[in-house]
Each structure stands twice: as structure tokens, then as C-alpha cells.
Image 1 (cartoon, rainbow, N blue to C red):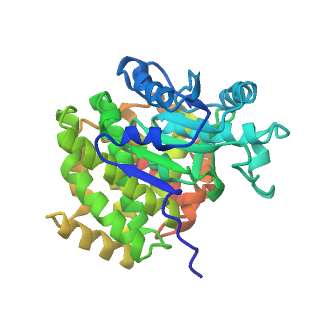
Image 2: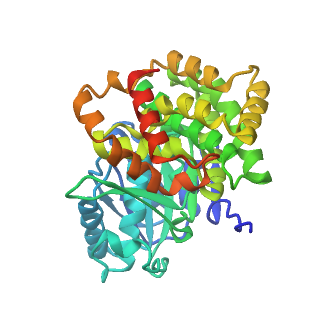
Image 3: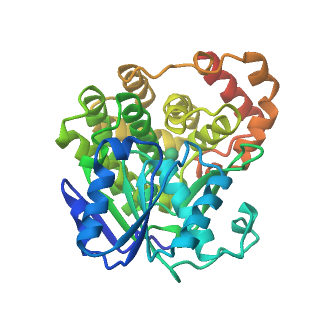
Length: 382
Ligand SMILES: [Fe+2]
């Protein structure tokens, strides 16, 4: 049976200058969560604070969310929020910042919870919005956490990444202003952009794909294939930045409803064991998985129809060309030098990828043996 679609929270803003919408939000106290220093250096944090000051709101800045944010960081942020008492939480940054801030929000609303397990089944997901509403301002065009119901948080001790998804965590407000993404360096532009392309293509091939998801994902993927190389070469082209941010968001609207596939399952696994950046892992795995999934007749037809819309025939080969243009390596041996370790944990990696929530909607449910073979292929570049 079809699951109900939810296309973003209650307010979705996009296009140059939409950051100013902050002035239209009713708030007295806002916590702003950021990562490193990029939003400080680009002047965007000051702009956000200024807009909020104009409407008479007090602000608190919670700094230092690291890439692959840990549960410890989440609890630190939640504690800072409890001391300040915001009625609005703003995540200003990339996927890690948005995921960490969403999760801080949960523990801010529910100080009685003290473990990550509390959010995992069979526990019932806690209700939010008693104390604050939530706003995302993405600084990268890729993860689409601004319109997604999910977060990835790492266990503080083991580093294992936990993907948690619940519609409660859908941000109420998403403000997608391309100006905020201008300062993104080329490498991050390329990797996060390929994450967005993977969202779109996995949503198209998902066994839960539907009409609305396809409309969004198809146009998003076409726009990303055309604009990502341009954004990589010239980050100051605001028209291109805007298209990339809109396409990333549209791909997010699709995948958060119809889910993904094993590119994500395997990228999450490599992220857990080797700290491979999420978008980079996606980009490198994508052509291998398109070829693997093409054994399924339906998936092969979807890939072919999309490739033809994008002006080609063989989608995997087109992604190979795109990766080359973005200087993304072809084989994991180039970025994970410890081959012995990699090969010694194949079984564990295959099991983790198999158990990942994204595997359920892949066109083919792979066996442990098939996943091991895929990990080997992608390592050796075969
Ligand atoms: Fe992703």
C-alpha cells in the first residue's frame, strides 16, 4: 500500500535573497547551530543574526558541529539549548550541521532521554514542537536534510553511523538561498552534488517510486548532470548555484518519501569503517551499482529512459564521465590504502550494508555474497 507523501514542512523558500524570510518568522529566542568557521567567514552568520535582531529576537550560537557528528555533540548542543530556551532552532550549514541540529532539537524537547537508542525502534519516536520549531538553511547543495525526515549520527565510542528517520524531524521551515552556498569550495561542491544526483537516481529506481517522486527526481537529476560541472568550475555563477540548490532540494523531496538504494547502504558502511565522506562514497559507488541493478529489467528500463532524456544511452558510463570531470577517483583503493584491513572486514561490511534501511527499496535485494563482490569490485576498480 502507498505511504502518504509529505513534501517538506510548512514553509519552503528558495531562490536568491530568500534568506530575508527570517524576518517573517515569529520568534523571540533563536538558537543557531553552525559547524566550523565558513558561515562566520562568509558573513552569512552575521546576516542571519541581523535579520533576527531586526525583529527583536535574541540569538544564541552553538558552534563546532564536526563532520559525521557524534552523539556527544548532539547532547552538548541540547544542553546549551536547555540553558537558553529557544522557541526557534536554526541549522545553518551542511548535512552534518542540519542532522546534528535536528537531533539536538529532539533531546532539547525531551531532556528525559539520554541515549541514541531511545530514538530507534521498537521505541516510539518522541513528539516534537512543544518548545520550538525548526528551520534549516543549507550551505551545501546535496544532502537535502532541509527537506528530509532523516539524520545520520555517529555513536561516540564506536564511530558507527546510525541512520534515523521519522516524519517528526521534517524541518518546519527550509530556506534555500544560493548565496549561502557561494563559499562552498569546489571539492565539497562536487561531492555534495553527487550525493544529490545519487538521491535522485536511487529514488527513480526505488521499489517505492511513484509519480510525484519521479517528476521531482527526473528533473533534479537532469539539472544536476548539466549544472554540477559548471558549479565545480565556477562557484560564483549564482544562476548555476541556484539550480543546484533547487535540484538538490527537489531530489530530497523525492527520496525522503520513496527512499533510496544500496549506493547509500554501502556508502554509509564505508563511512562507518573508513570515514569516507558521504558524497564521495556515493559518487564512486553509483556507476557500479547502476550496472549491478541493471540485471533487473525494470531498473534497466528506468536507467535507459533517463539516460536518453539526458542525451545518452548508458547511464553508468555517463556517471563515469561526470565523475572524471569532477576529479572523483574510480576505485576505493585510491582513497583507502589499507587493502588488508578492507578485505579482512568484507563480511562485516556486507552485513552492515544488507541491514541498512536503504537496502529494502533497492531494485534487487542483494545477497551477502553479492555485496561482498560489489565492495571488492569498487575497491579494485573493476
Ligand atoms: Fe545521501
